[in-house]
Length: 272
Image (cartoon, rainbow, N blue to C red):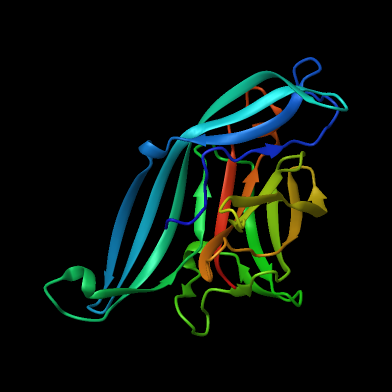
């Protein structure tokens, strides 16, 4: 599970919007990011043995840290930070791995082979007012051929088989779409983290809100973004997660609201 799901300071600029009811005086959020306590991350493994030939391992990762929001003001030439609000959080990320028995030797680790994985599902300790309904990935022809609605019961096979992890060439144009059901009148901020740049940094981009339907207290919002897979120099192929990170409006725009977010991470492979 050592995929670039997280990094220590995931910074993202906040749009320049007029002060609203969540702002203090003339201050608005101008930057935000996570600081993760890497040395305090814990992992738990729950093993379910199926007969004598298969096993499912549920991997749970607990991730503590702080969500930082910098409130300030903007000028045509600069951003002035006045106050940095720190919001402690504890996220939980879960993924399942399916194993098949391939041998019966004294070395237990050699007897089992991972053959499939599920997407990653993550939530913060504060329950958000939204839920992720689905995440879709379209190929370079614009066809949404990968749709996930129940991530921990959706399996992607490892290897060149039907139902295997989606594969994309460097430079392909792929689209990611997420549908969110929300009780919040204010739209969420949705960030797509995908792969790494040529220099090895995690890539992230804000997803665009393309439609909103429903009524007060029961909205359906759809966000989309097109990206191009890349690889670091000298790497021929690698597996990543396309992580859709949904953050409530109050998490960023409120001085007092705690972090309320959820994320799904779908595996994919980039090939040079």
